[in-house]
Length: 464
Image: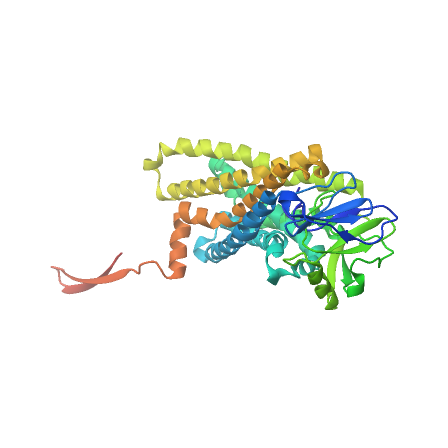
């Protein structure tokens, strides 16, 4: 599953039922999970501690309370705080890197990376953090309907930013590899104009690759009224947004049941309570709710398997990961060899060495944080998402791997400050925290012994 919108814990539920289904009835809580069951003829949907999860007619899927709490803590609470801090750090990075004294081919890559990372963090907040908190926060009661309206454009643009971030890391890794391991080609290859062209190509490639996702989903407006609760109101089979490459089923909080001759679908109403009174209250307000469904193109099996699973696994993860890993190993070896000669280096060589170390740190963090997502996509390709999502261990792994992707998008600013001396000094200077120079003026007199007499020289010495 990809980073954005492929979550099996956040967005929608599809309950397939018998053609003769009519209405719903509520049953009592069950044992340790605080489970409330909605029986739809031969089909069962289950609320677990305020969240609704799908179940097949034969064997309901139950998500443990621990998995729900893990999602709330990591993606909801910690994820939201991390997104705010990361957005602030990336914004400061953009301000520093665009300064004229920082301009270089490498700084252009890092500037582009900071912009992509901010887009990733924004997508994380919209599609992961707030949905994870909405079942527990009354102020986010209508959030799912709001986020549904952004799905057609926000979904592909978020994945464009993710892909752009990945290939930007490939770009500056290639540049550093040439600068360190192929120094004779630096003058012709690592220029600002070539870097800008490479950044433009990365953006175009990322955008063009994700164009099919603009046709994956469509938004549906559903007017809510009391008469729609637990009643048959539709003759057209709706499909609420599937956020995985294929057939993800995920949690919501409340549901209005809209039945058709073949399928019962659940419309999201994110409240913090699951009482019938709250459902009637929201429905009676006459507010319009929004959800989304797969288009005919998006539900095509070939599209889902070839494009969403195998193509994504190769182009978004395996190919860039292998390229970065191989070149990073070469860079680390070159840095180790140069350490023995560091004392004899000139000032410019030391700057290049420090820059290489900083970029190696950025790449290592990228590889570590992205590795679980690669494992996740391989698991989906091998076993299928439908089977994996029934395991609580996998759901916990998916939550943590998604959180690590967010860590990667939010942590580069700290790496720049820790390893980049020039970046650190420029940041302090911009923030007004750098000590100002003290100017001490010395006046000296030099006497010539010839005929010209005496000439006075003024000398100014700057001291830190």
